[in-house]
Amino acid sequence: MDREAVETAVRLALHRAGAAALTELLQFPAPAGDQRQMLCRCGQSARYRGLRSRPLLTAPVPPEVSRPYYLCPHFHTGQFPADVKLDIEDTEFSPGVRRMQAVVGQGIPFEHDRRQMEVLAGLEVNAKSVEGIAEAVGEDIARWEVAEIGRAVQLDLPVVLAEPVPVLCVEMDGTGVPVVKKETLGRKGRQEGEPAHTRAAKLGCVFTQTRWDEKGYAIRDPASTTYVGAIEAIEEFGKQLYVKAWKRGWSRVQKKVVLGDGAERAWNLVQQHFPGAIQIVDLARARQHLWDQARKLHPNDEATQKRWIRVQKNRLDKGKIEKLVPELRVIRTCNPELAEELRKQTEYFQTNAERMGYPRFRDQHLFVGSGVIEAGGKSVIGARLKRSGMFWAVRGAHAILALHCCQLDGRFEDYWETRRVA
Image 1 (cartoon, rainbow, N blue to C red):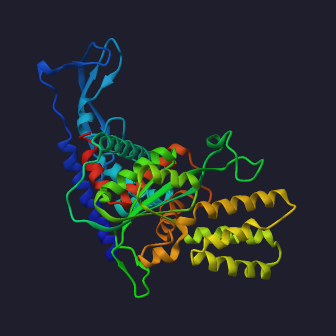
Image 2 (cartoon, helix red, strand yellow):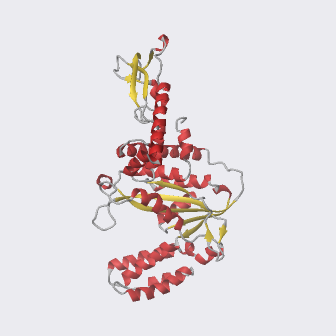
Image 3 (cartoon, rainbow, N blue to C red):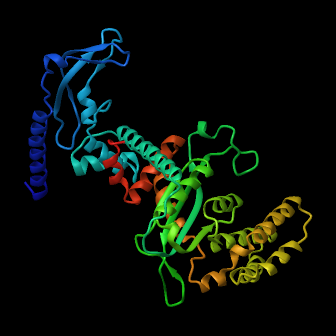
């Protein structure tokens, strides 16, 4: 036998020994004579009807658990009080196995999760069970966070006395998650006359910044990024992001910064939850607006597009929006669609002029690009929810997103320890 085979054999033997020990520990005695009745949900008494055994998948090889069974003669339903104590009610998986399924299920496709658990833990589960457990835990985390937000708002978020935070940045973005057809009924797609195929997932992140490089460009503090993700109304998402920022020390921040894509709904959220913060439009997004306009103004003429972009991009980068806006305003076209697009772009830059003072922001060593949230969108949402062939129910996608963000924030163990108390 090679060494790997020896290791596997030893692990299996230890698992079997552990299963034997667990089986002994999970043999409940028959209740005493004065404990052979318990209250049923119907209000009548359920009576003891002997010990019942059932298999249970645990981290070692599955043991047998034997516990008292009570039956209500009026409601005709059975009860296993020990299952509630053991945290195995209505499930065939132990808490330890469910924790494993949640941890692996938040990061990779469920079929891969199943294989990982088989290879690494010697547990044979199917992909559907991993999906069910991961989504159930994610839903519970989402409820846990909503309850946390409710408590925080009710207590009006008391100020914590601690060291001041030099710079705290809040970034937000959104992306479409592919969903099953029933989740998009009646929703319009991006193209006129086409139905929607995705639902908007919102992602926010909070991080600190205390340093910059020799060129003056801001450097994010290592391991300082925490995430909030949801598929829900922007009002509810705003509350989550607000509480996340407050927990990171928003009340004692010396310089508060919010970066967004320039959309009106995002700044409305900022005005509501982060008044007084320095507002910055992501420079890359603003440049993309110019490129989109160049392609529409000069289709099939790449050389002219680049000449036009060179001038306008220079104005944008230097924060000279007062020169860029008139340039867009004087463009004339007989195409009504292009004229409407020009109007929207002109309004976009004019409305966000103060948020595009990039030289001023760079002089303060602040971020002017939302690369952190862009990277987060790819790793948090894209890598997990937007793989080829994936189509989600909104409920499932929202749950996995909540679970994934909780895991990335390092809060999963806190949740797992407190969930039974709650």
